[in-house]
Picture: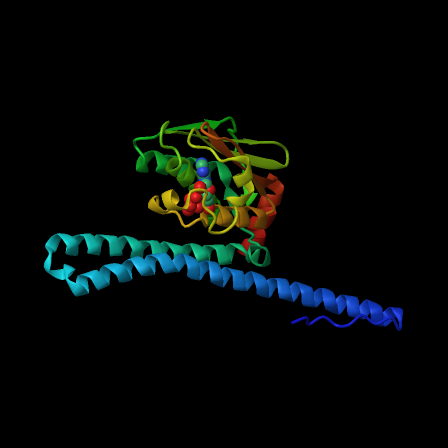
Length: 271
Ligand code: ADP
């Protein structure tokens, strides 16, 4: 139903008011539509794991429980789907929080150099089958106004993807550089790459280039939408450069704080 207020030609003031009201109604309607879409997407994403678990339980109930092999297989499959639902719920919460960052903009000052090095060390440890290369020309500390956990989360999402979508050449390069205003962190892989048409879409929530394959890798299609919302919440941005079959480079750029601004913020926080 159209809720809009009918246009009035009687006076300019009334016309202005009508326009203002209609703008507000449009904005509210857009918000409602987005929320509805979100609920639909979430239900859709949850339907598959629930259906799989239900299928296994029904099979066990009918005949499978007496066969140890079937029983074991069903338990494993159901556990895996339960894990998926748990990560889905966690990621949806993360996304929801990321969308509200601007309201709760932090006064936290984070040492970017330190976080990059820490995440790099962790990945090297977790994925011994991969070659990780850290190219850091920046030797001084680079500080940014960002909640430390959020910067970590963004880097982990990008590095996780670089690993997940590299099947042939298991190599990931991490680099960062700064200019007077921004620090730029790049995560490069030599994996499957992303076609031009998909480069925008991968930031949409629940979007996966290859649904079935991404699913087996445990992906919910929320990582990049979280990373994008987070970095934009801190007035930064994220871009992709990619060639199908050759790999991708994800670059994030984040405003840096001068030493003086960092000190002022630290002081403010302590008050
Ligand atoms: P997922 O949890 O599925 O990885 P993301 O939002 O992080 O969700 O990524 C969305 C999709 O973008 C992935 O399913 C994958 O198809 C594609 N993608 C992300 N990163 C890469 C990458 N480094 N190389 C190739 N494809 C990628």
